[in-house]
Length: 445
Image (cartoon, rainbow, N blue to C red; front, side, top):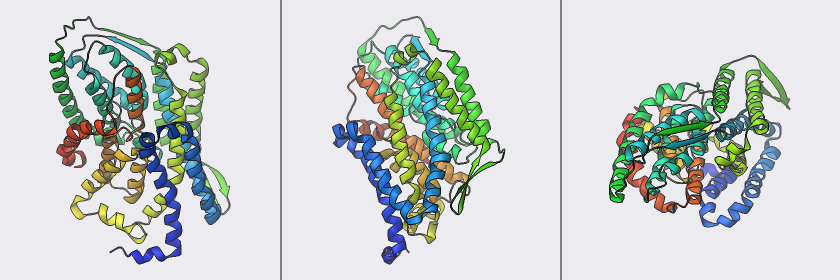
């Protein structure tokens, strides 16, 4: 049993104290946008940088070379490739303009959501939302009751659809960059995707059909599809193939000495990062601004991702180090909670999911993989449980996954009055939560 006497140990106190900025950061991401929106909108970056420095300076002072090594390793091998890949997927996606004309029937809307879920796994949930939300809004511009459509768009395209690919959702991209094989989500999570997607799309069709009948619309419109910026598809495929191939390759390491420690930077990973940056800069210079305007592209989205994940990646370092100690470390009570014998998979699924819903699914995924032994030792069962919990339950609240707020903001600018934080949760509790309860065993079995 965990002994609280251990907190009197100076080493333990030092470690736990260094974790405080991370939990303040997560609480800020969860609460400040709603409780203090003006402060958050104007001083978000200052707040995040401040918390990051509050951790980093004492960490380097206490651990010296080891502290510098841990932060440099995180920034160079984890944060930079992650933020460049997710930003590039979003930026490239905004250079495609899709215009759909069709009858706004429940069947057409359901097929649109299904298509969007597939797109999410190709270009990531953030990119898919940027490309698909406006065609979806235009398709249903004659509909009066549209809130449910946006909520299911968040469920399906901003979250669930991304589980089929390593590039689909931020947690899975993190796992890929940490060594999880590129095709692992496709091979091991397709059954979970199929079960949850089928039930969600069925629920959407029933609800949308009920509202559609009430509105008594006569919607007969010939189908037409126009895609502008088709060259972007080639660039997206190049990005996906290049990232996958170069991440899997092993062509030797570049050695960077940091005091007594040596940072190993694989040459293939360095080339991968150069490829991503080159594609990004190439589209910045050559991409048509008219396409960006049509998609209402905002540098603010990328800026927000850059700062939020910078804080998450750096401040989470001491928490990860503590969790790696397992049952011998000061966080052994967490290990006891997550390892209840035969129900271990369920414990990881629901604990990861709850933390993902109210904080953010990327750091939640990272933390619980570390608690399960790290990416080199985590079992297939637990990785499935953690992946499903992080991706699926990121849809439980607006703040569970970055694209959720993007979709909400675009919908509100289009004149749709979206529900409040708690109002949205009523939908997720009534629809998404029972779906996940029903498929809990199926998801991780």
